[in-house]
Amino acid sequence: MKMSDVIERFLLDMLESESDITLKRNELASRFSCAPSQINYVIDTRFTGQRGYIVESRRGGGGFIRIKRVEVSGSNYLMHVVNSIGSHISFDSVHAMLVNMFQADVITRRELMLMESVLNDRAIPFNRPQSDEYRALVFKNMLMSLV
Picture 1 (cartoon, rainbow, N blue to C red):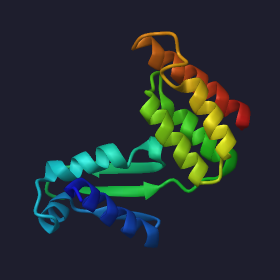
Picture 2: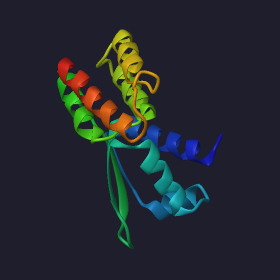
Picture 3: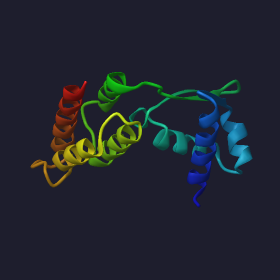
Picture 4: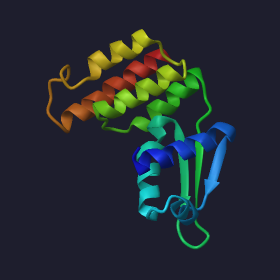
């Protein structure tokens, strides 16, 4: 198992028992015998708004990292996702968001499959960056229709 996966699993286990966690970057790096940049990488790539997390980070001697799982359901969850999309989105990000929504019982498997079929790279007739702009616009509109 990769170090990034080990760190992610550790943080996820902590989040299962607490609604939010506050950590010291250097202490976490020492625990896993890795550079603080490895901790940054895990948090930046695996604990994003698109995946349902809010991260607050302060650097320096008194610095910390606070990770909180967004606890919303139904239309509030969908609005959180819509607000986290931005003006561009890749299909990989769409897929991650849809899987999270499905696992949270916000959308059905059928809705997941339909949205993926419309938003995948084969279905969008543009090259990047236009395809990512178009995908964001269509994805937001699809989600708004579910609110």
